[in-house]
Length: 70
Image (cartoon, rainbow, N blue to C red):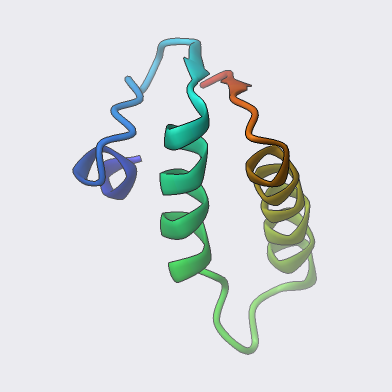
């Protein structure tokens, strides 16, 4: 979340947010740059792949997303 805020995504920690398409692109860049390292647990890798796929598809379609923080 902090790295996304530094790049201008500006999500609040406990707020639900609607991400604009340009925020999705920034979030994907930050997310990809912080991919799990070699030797990460299977669950971490699976979660990364799932979120990465959602962000990638949204970017490809020029869509925003709803982000729910809990």
